[in-house]
Length: 281
Image (cartoon, rainbow, N blue to C red):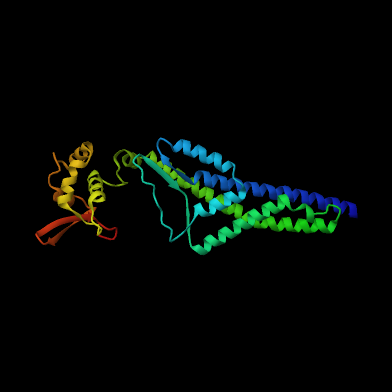
């Protein structure tokens, strides 16, 4: 092959690899947008749709650097992180897809993605000064550089595709749950999967009146019954076969999810109850 033909072939290969790598960058950017748009959904029933549409519009305008910054901070969490929930007085939905990881892995992901943003910007804005289409040596050097870049992008592309697969699987599981009987019981009656109405009723009381040590006085539980929705109380009565919930102690004895304890006080004794721990028999 003559010098001219070799130079032309080298230029063609550089052009091909520039286009290929730009496509890889766009694929990575698209995956980041998908993960950010679908990995965090939060809002009340009334404003969930509006918030989601607003977030989608916002993400579409982000630069790749901005996408990476939010993605790293929202997707990867240190094991020591604690979640905070917004306090609302309406039906509220929150879905957050996260990868739990150690701080070392978080730092590694942050560094890798920052390097990819830098290389993307370099390819688009700073390649020409070191690419001389009239020099075979320059073409071969840029070709090698583009090949190294591709080898760095492919694992990242695969990793993001795997995250998208995991996210979609999680969303399907959530969707299937919403359409299941357990989902209906949770959203209509506030019952956890596998929980009886009695267990749910007692759990509600403990959430309202338990002490710091987790125990709830039976006397206080009896007072709270009058504050609970009449329909909920009626359904518990139907489940346990009684006309009214007069004896809290007997109700707790009927539940396998709660335990009783007698406590000595200055005035005598009092009965307490609490949910059994997962390790309890």
